Image 1 (cartoon, one colour):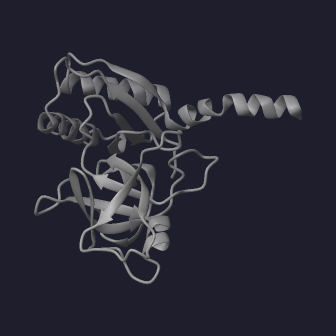
Image 2 (cartoon, rainbow, N blue to C red):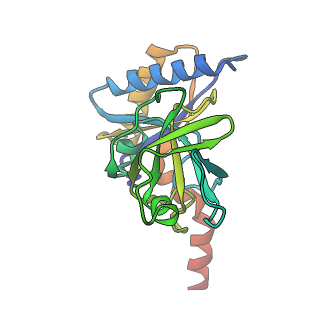
Length: 225
């Protein structure tokens, strides 16, 4: 993925804001509002920041059965908005882009190339359904591998559920042509229109956030050198 030009931030949740449907509606309204700003190319949302350590590994069940001799479907699980991929520059490899809501009670999902090669080497995973309680996913596309768990770690099999994370304070990601300081002012101004009683916090360029994670390792390398 491409972190340069992406600003990350969170919005303070409202006390008692726990209803998943209301949270998703607020997130989608926020993304729509941010996307209407001319200086913002795209806006996405995720429960976890990309490129920063934070695992959420789960075992998925293939709806329709899977032979006992085949390996278990162990993959990193990520809840993201449908706009997450273009915002971060993660390319679509096969299939079609996901939508915010699937049909028949399922959620559209994307899997990365590593997932497809690891578990569906002789066939396409597109159109197959995965289950992990309480959700059912329908795979609609394959995206390129991204170092979601850290820039110093190889990509792992990953399933992206394309449904706004039901978290009162998710991470928002906006790709902008502006300088970081100017972009932050623009974002704060727009959020003040949308939700004047909710302060914006943890505002910083995504590349800077990722760099801060490895500051100690860089210092050690400099001292050793």
